[in-house]
Image (cartoon, rainbow, N blue to C red; front, side, top):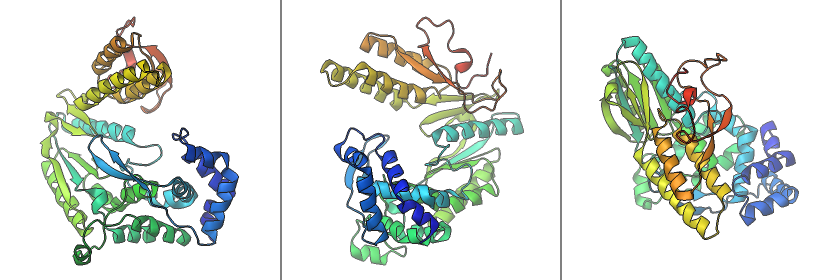
Length: 406
């Protein structure tokens, strides 16, 4: 057996995966049963995999309502453990090795935080190049990316990047576990064969991130201000012709893989502003980048706080859970320029729960360097503070995202 396969099926690897997979679902009986009987469960799964008797179990279908309604397949806990073991043993490294730096989805140390920072960085570079806010951009999407992805394209990608051959049968089984809902005659007539992957599986997420990596590298050959977040392509450039060429390139390369590109915003001017990852970016004439949250974010947060208030009155939750929920909202809202949205939500929180909110704010510096330590922009410790406007002397000082230190 290969070294990576031995690591994935070892007792240490299986038990570590069980501990990771139970995080966030410890309230459920099934994951806690696995955690309390880790050695027994890990030994049984190790024997099944090594003897070739392990097969996927049908997952449960769940509905996702935000930001839009979608259907996802939640894997069985046993399958989650095995997928985590494979990822930790080498599948994650193989699928993410060679990805473009500006591919930020589903990777350690990246995510929406990096995508937002890179967008601001691109806009700043364009302003420094042109001396004005004049520039162009294009935002492309893949039509029904997960449901329309050909199975064979993912298998070909696995055979190109996976270094452990013993993982391939299990990866193929994960790909084939999502049945194509079309009629058999329609599937047979499709030159790309069966399509569709399940949203919600760790392996499927990595497959989708890795599949379009050649498109990212092709865009970088003529446009340095391009990035992708899963199936969202964003290209910014001072020259409109570059954006038009990028659109043609993405459409052509997606068509070669059996996918269809959708232009979400057309070719737009940077001075008019644009939406990306549910944030509004606006490059001003002075070179400042202004960020605004999507209105739906504030609307959903008010509804969530009212729902927590009703649950609190019924005795189904406590204030500690409410404060943790509000802390997660603050972590998202602090990306916006200024504290206007946060102050409005702080007032709503105070009126609803009759207490002043306290939360931790990270030192997010989207511009330049930290004034004191001269460290790079990302990072910084968090500190607990009262809400701005409730006894605070300033609006947050250097803690305001999008504003340089005073």
